[in-house]
Image 1 (cartoon, one colour):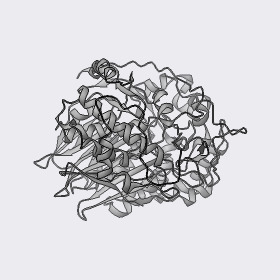
Image 2 (cartoon, one colour):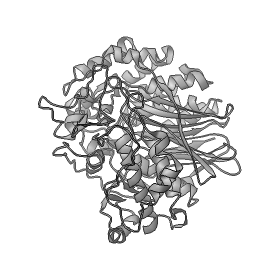
Image 3 (cartoon, helix red, strand yellow):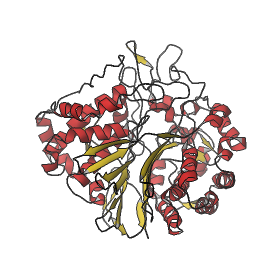
Length: 586
């Protein structure tokens, strides 16, 4: 096994001011909180019946064990998420939210479930403004503490899905995690390194997170056993009573108290917020790609599905499929399509229950063909959004942070799950309760509600769900409607680029899933072109600059996990070499 080392130093860049600063520049100029901790070359795994690809081996094993018992992909998803909360606490958990794609192979039906967090019912558009109407001066001021915590949705979403498609009893899906939480999980090198970086002030300045992650003032050590009996106790109640044990009673009361009495920025979460939370079924975003494929993902409040499909729809009208993978031409076409798609994303996408999102117009084939005609031989500079006849809106001003986790599952029945799950910032808000961290998802809203008198679609409103970039994706054969690929990634606003690049690599360049995920990354959020440092793609910097690109070399730390269905029916899964995940089958 070969290891490519990436710098472990993390220079925490405090944004001097986010007034008037676009979400793209804010989120991409802040060093990724889930920073790069190395690159381990991995081999894809092949399986005959079922497969789980997830961010820790313990989580993948827990899911595969459920599948071996005859469970469905959604049964396995419950087990995977429970384990990730324990073994990858910085990225996702029951204190956060998720988007779930579920393919029911018997009914031949795709369902998408919105388990995204909601703003508290007491929240107003001025949530992040001070007494003078100004937003926080640094990103930490917005993120850390109770003010940024939204109503968690993960357990409600999983329970909704399990009630429809589960075969294994709900109470049995938490057994492995409960046992490991009681005896202690093995702290991974990545978790240790992230803690050693000391980038999240909430972890050291707020209890109980400080004692849990920094016992005796020192970060958890790699290889150390870390019990979490409080989390085990929560899961025992959830296993026995269902999600109601989490959303009411003592567990809920402890959560509300932790938020409202947070030592830093007390928040608004209430018992009513938890009692009234519901996961929602949403219409999936689906579109044909090169006639052969159908790409399906999550609709609003996620911006991921729309923007990924827009990028691919634009790229259909470029020669990217004939370009050498990750060549100058390929990178140029890709970044220009990203510029155009992100321009629309930032202007128009929010929670469709609160704002009109012109989905049909944004995905219209003729519109995307016209957008592709704007791509020339040189970088176009900042792309302007399309005009859809809506009331004038301002571009979003959110502080979207690259954390999160993704897992992919295909069971022995042919059902599939693509689920992206998050607590937002690495280690979330820093508020910890009953053994799990709470999200800081409200910073995915625009920190200012309007700009120059024009409202932002993604402004804070009571009960609203913040816009997301999460892009859980399933690719179908457009003729047979059979699942071909299941994929997704963490990475904040870069998620869209990571997923779109992987799809181009698999569908156009015909790379296998593992090879596609290992390609060096390139991103553009309609600002500048980022090239992944410590990779061969940095050799393109000069050639891209000659095409007019502003190029920055930086960590682009994805966490892709994916599974492909091979022509002979076997499954081929892979895990991103930038993290610690695994693909496990029978």
